[in-house]
Image 1 (cartoon, rainbow, N blue to C red):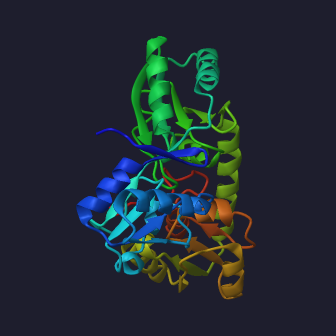
Image 2 (cartoon, rainbow, N blue to C red; image 1 turned 90 degrees about the horizontal axis):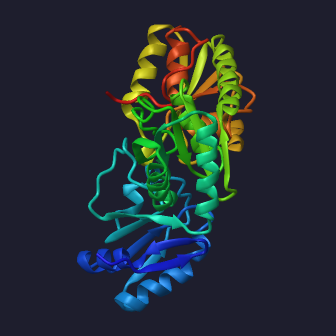
Length: 340
């Protein structure tokens, strides 16, 4: 099908997919979920929708945080005929399932791909990396496909990808046969996430916004050291606060496993429900009776937003190693324990 691309700032959205989704579902009440930083483009998007499908549709913007597809709450979206979730792929571990949700790619178009790819080739050659795997985020799928094509045409072997990495979800098989894993994403957030999972691989960050190409091993080492220190501190905790997620981040099996382990070891626990978790929220509920916390919603909240909190705040995998008294000098293989 032919794309009908419209600009939202420095990003492109396929309006053809939006129109088809609205017409095929015969939706009259539509909820739009845009990533943080792009909500300001809602008026322009609304104008495009109404010009193409008619003025009698009601289109609402979800003003709540949309950091990822894991935050989709079916209770709050249930009153709409259609939910247009822009800029994220479906969350692999989601507890929701709804045919009313349409996931729409949002491609960044402000980069200079030729110069960025040239930098990447030089970097890979200097590292003697021939076999390459590629992971990316929703906003850089086209660029990542271009990178694959350019690398292959210049003698590199792309053994996997591009595959999509989310905050706590990293395709674990990406680095098996690769000399390097190339992460095409802005900042260090996703590159460090890949580096934490594939710690024996060269992880190369390609930032389309700054056009930087770099090895993230030093950042991963510092990150790992900080997390191991937090785990060691949590060994002294006699009572734990379990922060329970909501919407797609609600993992009852994980909460149950933590409760069972804590009870078996005669450790106290307290359950908290927090739709949005910040340092301010945690300080407001913190008590002297709690020695450590575990975040069962988004593990990246623990390792990024709450890394400097006064008490240890751990991811599920970190907390399980501590509670089970496993080797806390070795970091877990993942941020998030999976239900299988």
